[in-house]
Image (tube, rainbow, N blue to C red; front, side, top):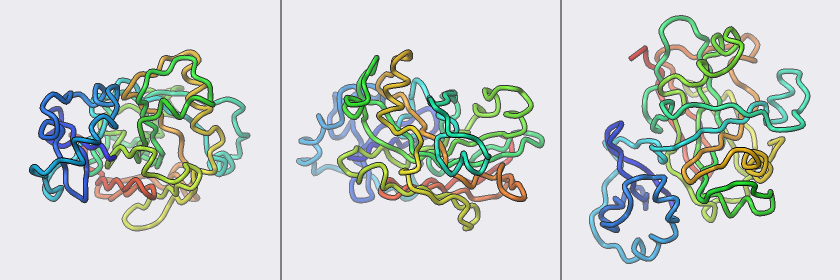
Amino acid sequence: MRLVSFGEPGSERPGLLVDHAIVPLHELSPSAPRSARALLAAGLAAFAPALAAYTGPRLPTDGLRLGPPVFDAGKIVCIGLNYKDHAIEQDKPWPSEPLLFCKTPNTLAGPHDAIRHPDGEVFLDYEVELAVVIGRRARGVSAADAAAHVAGYMVANDVSARRWQRGDGQWYRGKSCDTFYPCGPALVTPDELPPVAQLRLTTTVDGEVLQDALAAQLIHDIPALIAYISRDITLEPGDIISTGTPAGVGNFRKPPRALVVGNLVACAIDGIGALRNRVAGPA
């Protein structure tokens, strides 16, 4: 199944993507929760019989704004330095344990929304990432049991203001500006995807390929991440784990390459889809 949201920012509604059209959840089941988090807690599989029998209206995606699939996410837990080639391009050792930081929910943006460049020179950067969405509460979960807590996967772009990230001495401001986490285009359930290690991640800027890697390069895989995080931080349905980015980010290119207003950034993962976000000036 593929969960999407649609509608204006702040007024998104959930739906299921079927053959390039959207079945609104309220049409499929009038009692379905309007919250993405509540839907995931109930379990998307619960709606499969109704979807199979559904013959009602579908919304074409053309001309319709897609929002972040989990538009009301509670936490966005991010992993730094989690791809082997990304560590190599920085000449850093692989971390023995995951490096955690957070992005705030105001960063959430849809798969085609603008990325807003903050006012001033910030060295705006892109990071394609595989995002894992939690479907069942996880506290003290073992790596062996982690898969049962995964609702699905999305494409994400961990947009970063590198100058602030370096200058502030911590990452909060540089990672958490409005629109700094485009994601989607849908939350795809695990049964629709090949093994995670086979997923290919790419980023292009104005058509030029700048990142290209397989998720097999993850240093700490998804079961290990869920086990490590849930040891001390309870993960709830709708929480997002952003699993890290491969080599090729602008900050470590030679010469370094920042995003500028007008750039079109496309982040894609095979089997899940693509984000296409234009960089725009400050709101």
